Amino acid sequence: MLDSVAAETGIPAEEVAAHITVSNPTDTLLVVVRATSSSPEQAQDLAEAATAALAERTSSVGFTMDSANGFLSLSEVDPSPVAQLVSPSKSRSGAIGLIAGAWSGLLAALRLEEVRRTTNETAAEQAGHE
Image 1 (cartoon, rainbow, N blue to C red):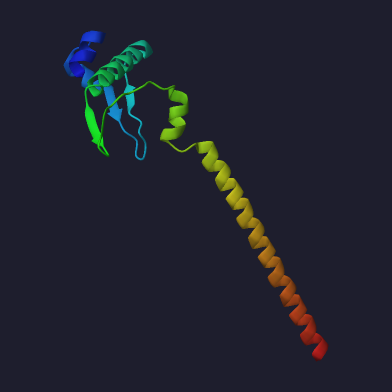
Image 2: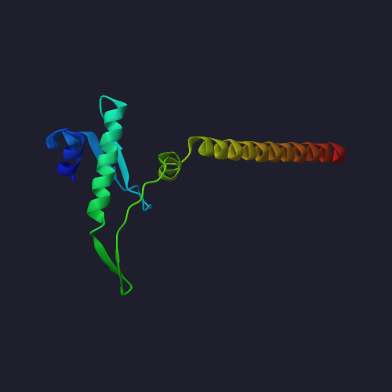
């Protein structure tokens, strides 16, 4: 794969590996290709070449599942929605935390009010019996 990317981009194969990472986020079927470079254009070229080389390589990989044979295939997806699948949304986590905190605070305030009311009623009853 590195040789294919090197041929496509003109970057020496020994340098390509330092610029590309390929990962499979836990509990997903995604293969994430990331490329870094001194220029956005070169990073884009590296990522595209790596994705094409990976797709070509996996198209020849076969598998058998439940007595059925098949071949792997990769397709490109828009990276913006994929980022939402790969990692938890900070805004969603913040909203959940805000809602959970508000409910916890409300429940604590109601419980404190109930304890205060019970304490006042008990004190009033004891004062009335004396």
